[in-house]
Each structure stands twice: as structure tokens, then as C-alpha cells.
Image 1 (cartoon, helix red, strand yellow):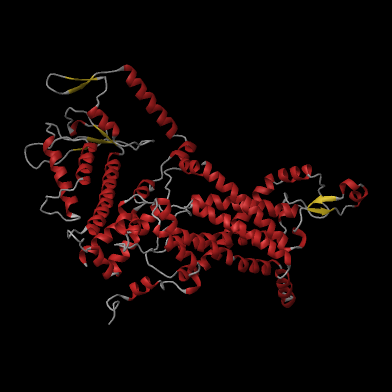
Image 2: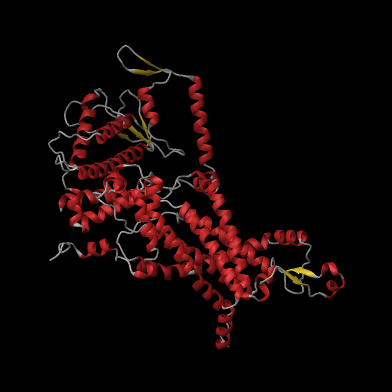
Length: 606
């Protein structure tokens, strides 16, 4: 039956490298060079280049190869003539065969390479979740993001200039001869400013800058890994129609926004360029574009919209190709045949500190291994010789359990922070529920299982105990399973809290309204661990708070400022926290923990 008779079809195609069709497997020489370079051991940057180097180069090559097709479609639609279709197509293809088109294609290729470089430099596998609108503004005005925006504005202007020259016509040149008779008398005033060309250039810069803003606002630099593995060609073909539709709609909205901006501020660059270049404004040749009648030029609006579609489409193709190639599954060897390749084996990559995308690819490979590859799963459980120790399984399971414990701790901390939001710990002396006359306050008492009341414990003390129990799993536990130990330790932590802190008082919590700036329960923890100077301990062991005028005055002023700012709509608009931002931040890297859970479950069950 052969050595590969027991392998499933998915692994057979995966191992021979035919998971993806031949048209998208360019760069075979690059792959061979990458495999040859594996003999040289290196650090995280080396493994990043060995895994992602050929993918980046291949995506750039394909985006450049698809550029002539986009340019051809742009030239055809820019000179559309439905009444004379044969002459329209003949003129379009004759323009494509001209010599100057080659120069502008090379210039456009340089622009595409620069856009791909910025895609590579700004990618992330964990999305950025701003908690408020002010945090989003701070993210946009970061120096790196500003450089990204300015470079994209310049590249958009460059592509708009190439588009105007390729289409010819009245939009090709910035300086044109004047048509007014009085301008022809003086030799110094025989050239005028072509405002159509200036409108094109500024529209390209505006669309490039808007693309950069939406790039960070919509987290387009985030690389989501596909849940279902598909061919690269199928993923690209499925996304192509959506890219065309999105580019057309977005270019239309950006054109609308630019027309509004140009109507109010268009006279500033027009006056500056005409003064700097000593050019006249020929209002007889065309109406000024910073007026309503000038902006209602349908031919100009159509060509600017088509130029925006061309710019956005080429950039989105580069972006989607990089995303497809960067998230492609990578095969990490479980047990490398040579010691020189040990830095690329799956257990070492998982337990080391590689770049985050390499760790995601390793966990993705482990997920595919545990579900679809029985032969590689046997390598995970193989014993070392000599000694007979499951080193591979021990390293992989330890890292998966560490990831699950980290997520459990994050969830416990978030639950405690959410539970204490809007609540304040009451005084140490007992409070009777019948004495509360305010309808806005509600007293919660812990239910008693016997005559002995339950002790009062701060929430952060419980959280710290849970965290310590979770971080050091009990090996000697009778339920020592990969997932059962965490549950047992959490229950043990609860019982430790209930028995170690004895207090005659029950836990009292009073509800109050949400605060403007909510902090973690560190204030409550500080009250228990570091009492303020205004507190003292009596002979019976009870804490008695002494009045402090300065401390009370500071607290009152602080509350007054918060109440004053909370009533200002503009302040709250920027400072108010998004209701879903906290939980989104907790689960921002949940894909890694989902894979860790799947890997542990499937590896143990099969």
C-alpha cells in the first residue's frame, strides 16, 4: 500500500505542497533559497524572514503583475464612448501600446512596492481596541501613523498624476495656454493654471490620506487567520468582487467629502500655486471649481471618481494579497531531522519568544496537526531515545495550558473589575437593612448557610488568590488533568479565602451610580493593606476612621470636578468609554487561546 497509505487526503496534498494551485505558487526559487538558509541558526528576526520572507516577496510580485490589468481597465473606462464602441476600443488599446505607458507603469509599480512595504511594517495579529474616542484620536495622531498618512497622501497624488497623464485630454497638464485675448498681449501672462489638473492631484492626496485614516480606524492592519483552510486562489477570487464594490462605493463617498472640502478651502492651494508659479487664472476657459456651478461638472466628477477607484483598487489588491499569503498555514517540523533546524521545530517555537505572527502560525499548524494529521500527531507523543520521555508533548501541552491559564486569569480579573464598577465598600460597622431610607441604595448581604456568618474579604484579595492558584497548578491533585486542575485549584482558593479571614461582620456592598473614570479595585485594596493616616486601630481591634479636614476637602473637590465634567456633553463624548471596549480588549487575542484549547482537546481525544 506504500508508506503514505494511511495518510488522509488533506495531509497528502499538504505534504507534497499541492494545497494551492500552480498559478499562485510563484517564487519556487525563493522557497528553495529559504530552505537552504535554514542551516544557519539565528534569532527571532531570522525565523521571521525564513517563514514570511518568500510570502512577502510573492505577494508584492503578484500585486505588481496585476497592475497592468487594472491600468488597462482604467484606460478603457476613462475614454468610454458608447456611441462609437469600435473606435473607443481601438483608441484605448493604441494608447496602451504607446511608449510613455511603460514609463508610467514602472512608476506605478514603485508606488505599489512602497504601499506593500507599509503593509508589512504596520501589520498586527492582535487588533487595537481604543477604549474611547479620545484614545482613537491619540492613535491617529501618533507619529508613526502620521508618517503613514503623509506617505499615502503623497502616493495618492503620484498615482492621480499618472492617471491624468495616461488618460490625456484636458486634465493632463498643470500649465495650459491662456485663452483670454488680453492675456495674449503681455508675454509674461501667456500661461494659466489648469484647475482641473490641480483638482485631480488634490483629490488623489485626499483619497490617499483618507485611506490611511480608515486603515487604522477600521483595523485594516489586523491579520485575521482563516477558520477554514482554502486555496489562495479561491480566497482571492472570493474577495475580488467585494473589493471592486467596496472601492467604487468608497471612492464615491470620498469624492463627496473632497468636493465639500474643496468648496470651502479650494481657493487656498489655487492661490498659492498660481502666485508661486506666476500663473493666471483663466476663468473664461472653465468656471472656478470652488463654486457650486464649477463642481457640477459631471465629466470631471466621473474621471475623479474613476481615478479614486483605480487608486483604491490597486491598494486593496496589495493589501488582500499580503493578508492571504501571511496567514497561509506553515508546516513546522515536530522533530527536526537535523540539529541545525531545531530552532524551527514546533515545540521550541511555542516555548520560545518568537514574533507574535510566528507563534500564531505555530498554533495554527498545531491545530491542523491535531485534527487532520494522525501521523504527525504520533510524532508529538513519541518518546525520546534513550530515556523514554515525551519531551515534545510535555513542551506543547505546557505552553497550551499556560495560554489557557492566562486567559482564565484575565477573565477573573475582568469579572472582578466589572463587579466592583459602581459599587463601594461600606463601613466596617454593621449596617441594618431597615435603617436605609434612601431608595437609591440597596444593601446586599451574603446568605448564611448556618448560624455562623461568612467572613468579609476584599475582591482583589480573592482575585490574587485565584491568580496564584491558577499560575501554579497542583500536580498532586487526584484530578490532575489538563483542565481539571484549574477548576480544583479555583475551588481550593475559594475555600482558603473563606477559612483564613475570620470576621464577625458580613460583606456589605452598597450600589451607587457609575463613575466618570472607573478604576480597578485598587482603592479598596489600598484601604485594607495601607490605611490612610486618618485611620487608627482601637483596643478591640476595630478600625476607627478619624476625621481629616484636608483629605475630606480634596475628596469633595475631586467629586465636584467629576460631576461638573460629567454634565458637559462634549467632554463626555470624547472621554466616555465604549461599553464593549473592555470585553473586546479581553478577547482581542482569543484566537490563540481557542487554538490552544482545540489542540489540547483533539490531541488527548484522538
